[in-house]
Length: 210
Ligand SMILES: [Zn+2]
Image (cartoon, rainbow, N blue to C red; front, side):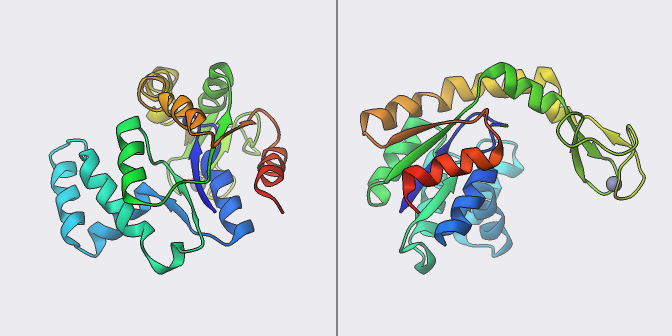
């Protein structure tokens, strides 16, 4: 079962990827984790990636694809995996296709822009312990004060509306074309991501099978 997760930033694909991974006992693979691991272990390709990152440059597709392909060739991936955060562009998707066997499902967690903006604008994070909250869905007990450690909670720059809009635009330009790409391959599944997290998971399980 080889799965790719698609969806705008804030659509909840990381959460769903984790649940799929647990339910079907396949690894949850995020590019962030692969980067961290390869840099920590000072692999050749990891050092190559770090070189770009240290200069503030985007890591080129061929380096990212090599990193992901190496990870997917490991023993724990032989029964499948759920890829989260990759591919981000159609060139990456076609490179992935050349590097690995075919993908079985591309699961798109569909959430309208207004809801994405609302979700992200309501996020708050503790300045001290890093605990995260949401002013509507998961508020602190005392307004502005972290439940866990009593320090101040604030809106991160990443969650400010201006930043969220920028990220949504990048997503639309670069990543949204993947929806059509996988639709044409007949492996796209769109899930209503405005539902409760549990209902989203149940819809996915209905498609993948129990
Ligand atoms: Zn705290």
